[in-house]
Each structure stands twice: as C-alpha cells, then as structure tokens.
Image 1 (cartoon, rainbow, N blue to C red):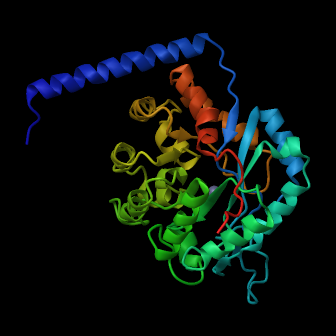
Image 2 (spheres, helix red, strand yellow):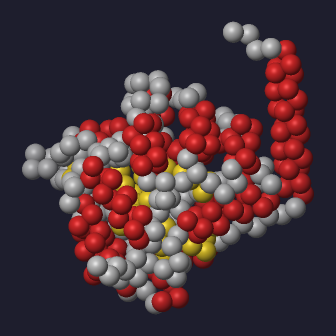
Image 3 (cartoon, rainbow, N blue to C red):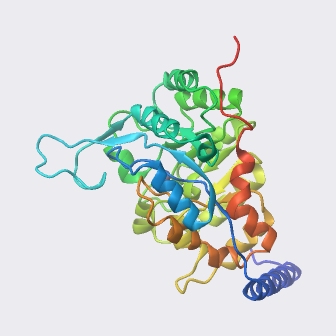
Length: 352
Ligand SMILES: [Zn+2]
C-alpha cells in the first residue's frame, strides 16, 4: 500500500530535523574536544584455552586508555586439543574439535581478582559465566560461587547461547536463551539483582530473518525485573560473513527496546564495524537516532580475550560514533550506562 503523502512529508520533515540536529551535534563535537572516560562493558579475562595475562596488565591498559571500569568475565567454553590434532589450535575455529563447558573459569577469575588490592578491585565488575546453559543445575553453580566468594560477583554472563559455528562445535544440547535451565539462571539473577549479559544471535548463518529473536524475547518477557544486556545486539563476525548487513537488525532492535524496558544493548565491535559506521567510517544516522532516542540503553565494550594491548584502540574506535551524539548521551554510552545496571554490592548468599 502506498504511504499517504502527508506521512511521506512528515517522515521527510522528521528525517531532515533529525539529520539537522545530528549534523549540528557533529559540528559541535568537532569544535569541542571531548575526553571520554569509559566503562568496558564486555571483557574476558581468558581466551578459549582459559589463558590470559595478569590483571595488573589489564589495569595498566585501562589507565592508558581512560577506562575507569570494566565488566570482567571468564570464558564459559574450553576448546579441546583433540588426540588426532598434531597442532594445538589457536582459536576455537582452528580445527574441527569440540568445545565444552568449563566451570573452573569462574574460580580462575576469582583467584585473579583476589590477588588485586581493594582499590584496584573496585574498578572490576566480575560476572559469573562458568556453567552449561542447557543444564538445570546451572543455578547450583551460581549459588556455590557466591557462597565461596561473597560480595565479589556483580552480574552473570557472557552467557553463550546461539552463536553460529561456536554452537555447532559445542558438545551436548544447543543452548537457548529461553530454556528451563536459563529460566532458573534468570530467577537467580532476579533474586540477587544481577544483570545478565547474553550472547544470543538474532538468526542463523543462512536465514535472512530474525529466526531466534523469540528466544531472547521470551526471557525479556518472563523476567521483567532482570536487566538483560544483549551482546553485540545479536550479531557476530560469522553472521556478518554469511549475511552481510542484516536489514532486519535495526527494526528488531528498535522494536525490542520499545517493548522491553529491561533490555540494554552492547554495541561491541561487530555492531560498530558493520552497523554504526558505514564503509567510509561515517556514523550511520539511523543508529545515531536510535541511540539518541534511548540514551540510557546502550553501552560499549572491547570483547578482548585475556590480552589487553588493544584496549585503547578498541574503545577509542567508538569515538567517531560517540562524537556524533549529544555530549551527555555520549558520556552515558561510553561509561555510565553500564555502571547504572550494576547492583550496589556484589551478591551474597541470602538467608533461607
Ligand atoms: Zn564476548
């Protein structure tokens, strides 16, 4: 059905108005020098082999990059060096061997954090991730970890559910954001006021529609008190390779934000490279308008895996996008929105 002329006109006027506002913001941003302070809302202390540099190196990298705070998570999956493989793989995709769920990642992280002094630890916000999201015992692990380390844990994640090739390599059942096991995890999160960071691809490598969005949406609808952070807005490098730019992503993110006030979006790198910036590195006006409309719902992260030399480059790569936002919104996205989701204190066992 053709769009009536008056709506076309209204849309054009709106677009021009948004365009004009954003353009003037961009000019203002160029004039004023903005020195952002950051929160890294997506960071892993180890890689898929559970290896990582010392957290003192992370702290130095944070100081050098202007990062005041960091979410820090282990890695819930471990890549197997299989008997028939002559070479130790470099990444999970290095060969056809499986990956498996690895709970010790949380214990490694706790030990690394406990080696820091209290002032250093204030800047780290550890999230629990070492459980199998298809196992209805997952919440028992969470309970055990907050009992062993009362007051330490500030969130749950990155939980890896739908993740294209990584899911295909994972031993056991396919993890879903709306499984019974995950609902028990969300109930635990709700009880302890812990935010949940979820990696849940919006679709598969081949389906050009939001195939899996219902899984995320079931979680959002069922647990309205839980703050969810959608890692990479449901994208991944592999999805990008197979799908190119998914034209349904922006409409879906827009719809989900309007319908679910408990949803926040992690814009880290696959979103930045493919959606926030165009081929010439210019900020995309539609994504700018969306962030401008929901200034408290977006955050950024490096997604580094236990090696921190690129922290500065990763976070400053958002500056061109941030510079095109109003200064107050940019500050929120760069630093404050992540902090606003955290509980006042780390989780402790609750009285029966
Ligand atoms: Zn990650």
